[in-house]
Length: 269
Length: 307
Image (cartoon, rainbow over all chains, first blue to last red; front, side, top):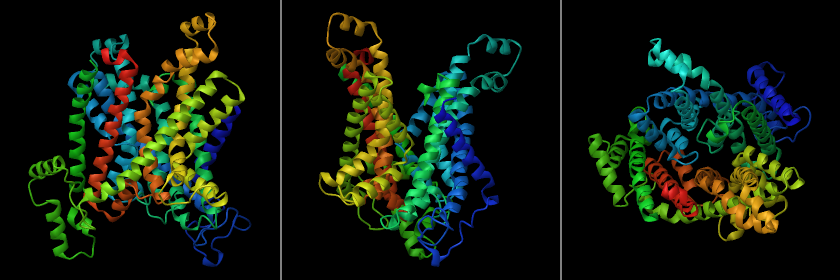
C-alpha cells in the first residue's frame, strides 16, 4: 500500500474514532460558552483556540466529526435503499420499467449541483435528518445507475438462467444471485459518494440552511466564523483545514479502492 | 443532419422540463401541515395567512393550480415575492448578469486551465510537472468551495491585498470568486485530459505521424489533441452543474448580487415564489448548457450525430 493511502486510512481511522468515541475523549464541552475566554488563538489550555462565544474549537471539531460522518453515511444509506432496488429492477426487466427509470433519474439529475438539495431543505426546513435526506437524493441517481448497469450486464448470464430454471422467483434472483455479484461495485461507488455527501452536507450547513448554527458541524462553524475571520483567522483555518484533510483522505482511499477492486466504477461515477 | 439532431435533442428536453416544472410547482404543496401557515410564521394574523393562500392559489384544485402555474410560466410570469411583493422576474432580471458573469468566467478558466494542465502532465508522465498537476487536482477535488473561497479571501484579498475582498463591479472583483469556482472543475478536467491524451498518444496514427518525421508539437496539436479533448468537452455539461454549486456558495461569501445569493436568502425567509422561480431558472440554464455541450460534441465528432 503506498504511503499516501496509508496516511489517508490513518486519517479516516482517527475520524471514525472521534465520531464514535468523541464524548468519551478528554475534550471540553463543545457547547459550553465562556465569554471571558472568547476568540483566543491556539495555545494552552485551548489547543486550537476558542470561537466568538468562547467555545473550545478542538472540542467542536472532535464532536463535529460525528455530524459530518452521520450526514455522509446517512445520505449514502438513503441513496442505496432508494436507488439500488429501483436500478436493479430496471436493469433486470428492461422495457417500460427501464424507460420509466431513465425518466425519473433524468429528472433528478436535471437540477444542477446542490439545487435539488436546497429545494428539499426549503420544503422540510433545517435539521440533521432533513439534511441527510436532501443530500441522499443527490447520491441516489449515481448509485441507481451503477445498480442498473451492473444488473443489465449480468441478467443473461448462465447462473441467472440456472436460477430461473430451478424455479426462483424474480425477487429471489435479484436478491440472492445478482445482488451479491454487484455488491463490490456498489461498495466502491458508495465509498466515493460518501465523500461527496459529506461535502454537500457541509456546503448546506455553511449556507445556513442545513442545520441550527448551534451545532458544531464543520460547515456551520465556518459560517459562524465569517464575521470574525479577518482578525481571528484561526476560526476559519481550523475547520477549513480539517475538512480539506478529511476530504483528501476520502479521495485518496476511494481512488485506491476503485483501482484495486473495480475497473468498471471509474466510468460510473 | 445536424439540424435534425438539434431538433431531436430539444424535443427530448420537453418531458424532463415539464416534470421539473411540476416538482417545482409541487414544492409548496409538499410543506408538512398548512403551507400558508408555515410560510407566514407563527406570529402571522389570519388575514396575512389568507393573503398568502390566495397569492399561491392554494384554494383551487391541484390540477387547476398546475395548469394556471404552467400558463403563467409560458407568459413569463413567475409570481410575486411574498416578502417584497415585487414580481420575481424583476429582481431575477437585475441579478442574472452577475451570476452569468461568474459562471462563464469560471467555466472558461476551468476549461483552459484543466486542458492546459492535463496536456502538460500527459506529455511528461512522472515528471515534476505531472506530479504538481496531480497534487493540484487532488487539492481541487478535496477542497470544499466555501473553505477555499474563505481562505483565498483571507490570503489574496486581506493579507496580500491583490484583489477586493467582496462586492462586484469590474474584472478585479471577479478574479477570486471565478478562480475558486473553477478549482474543483479544473481538478476533474486535468485528470480527464491527462488520461485521455496519454491514451491517444499511444495510438498507431500518432506513431505514424511521428515516423513521418513530424515534430512532437505538430503531432500533439494537430493529431492527438483534437481527439483527446473530446472527453473533457463532453463532461463540461456536468462540470457546469458543479460550477452552479460554486456560484451559489461564492455569491454568498463574496457578497455578489447574483441569483445564487438570492436563492439562499429566499430559503431563509421561506419566500416560496422566489425559491420556485430560481430553482426553475437554474434547471433551465443547466438543460440549455447541456444541449449546447451536446451540439459542440456533435459538431466535433461526426460519429455522434450520424450514429
